Length: 112
Length: 116
Image 1 (cartoon, each protein chain N blue to C red):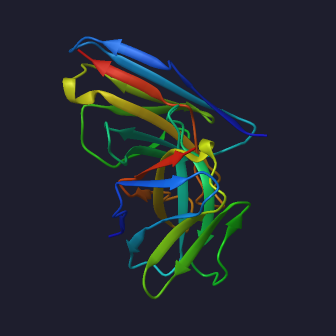
Image 2 (cartoon, each protein chain N blue to C red):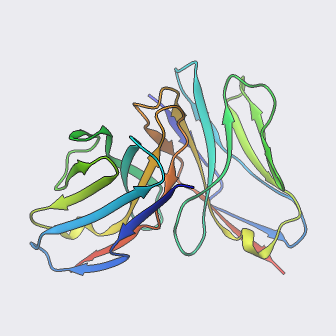
């Protein structure tokens, strides 16, 4: 069966510091991968998605970037965090055959 | 452009009773999917049910069922025999068929409370 992992689970970072969140998927090959952000009390906003290694599409211009160095690894990064980057970050995957997305446990990021 | 609207910020139901959560959507696509996701206090998004737009039959998963009214662009979730574990945020979402694009549009959610 497929599983999706995210780490860290919780992160507190000062403004201006770098960021690296990691997401990995097991049990499937060539998944579509997604990064979402959820602000407090809000729905999900798609940040990036990837259909293959090195292929990244950005949905929202912001202080963040994404990379996919391996087939089942998706990384969310920032060179300098802003207060507005605080939120709950969710990674998701889907197959190329269906639109059903399955989510990881998420990372709670607080920027102070 | 696609939009998904959940007009009920909060709902409450008595344990063992039935509750219906509302969702409306708007899309210019002819081939799309609709979803309900549950987000418990742990905040992991869990797929509850999925409906393919071309299917007229309403999807059902155990105690969860949908009422899909394509002409009215309505996609409501019915939870029967509500349990304490059903308490969570519920998000309606829509996506265009054709996995490589894969952008799901989410509503703002409905917080469901279950009273013992």
